[in-house]
Length: 244
Ligand SMILES: Nc1ncnc2c1ncn2[C@@H]1O[C@H](COP(=O)(O)OP(=O)(O)OP(=O)(O)O)[C@@H](O)[C@H]1O
Ligand SMILES: [Mg+2]
Image 1 (spheres, rainbow, N blue to C red):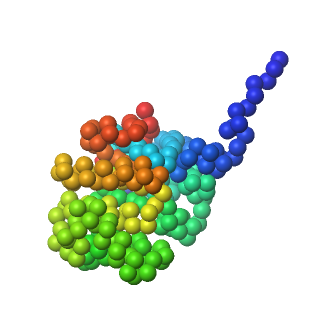
Image 2 (tube, rainbow, N blue to C red):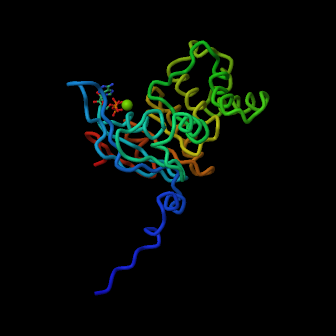
Image 3 (tube, rainbow, N blue to C red):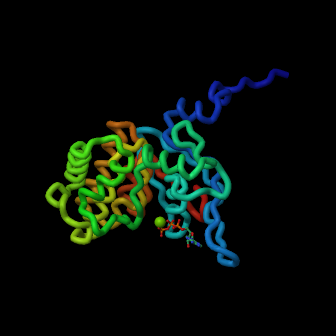
């Protein structure tokens, strides 16, 4: 009896498959429990996912289904109890804290659901923070880039305002600019338009889409907004800690 031939992709290692498929990020069979004792919850129940360069993916699902928990794992901000995560061609789920921090700084821009700006700092300083951490640009270059990103999110006039002097929606837009600071290959955004009116939702969404299309960045966003989800390249519905 003749044996079926393996496809070329199946002969490649996982990293080589990622590169061949234009994958910026891949995860396989992620599990995550949260809480202690009787309050311990099996939040993620075997999630596998791929984020492609140049693609915008929407993760949608009811409150509490595990969207933020998943994004935290993909952003290397938390570790899975089981499963694997590759950033580009590097297996990161078993890496040291130091390596994970370095990979996050270089490759990942994260927009938090509750933006977490440094409130005592200006919009400009907040956007410059990831650039200072990476340490690749001069002070003047960092200032110019931060100004340009703040202009892109419609805050060109408010660069020197303290975060406390900005509205919730303006703070959210600073958080988007901050996530883009180091030109990450992966942008993970948890409800990036959640606090925004229609005009600014469109501005932020159009900016993220432009980055994906023009720079080949992979954008993964969580949204409860069906209109935004419909405009993404792919919609991944989630329920009870799994993709449907
Ligand atoms: N520290 C914790 N201990 C126990 N359970 C937790 C903990 N943190 C989160 N959870 C639970 O994990 C589940 C997933 O939470 P998560 O924040 O990922 O949901 P989500 O899909 O992002 O929801 P939303 O749309 O409201 O932001 C929820 O049921 C939540 O109650
Ligand atoms: Mg959430």
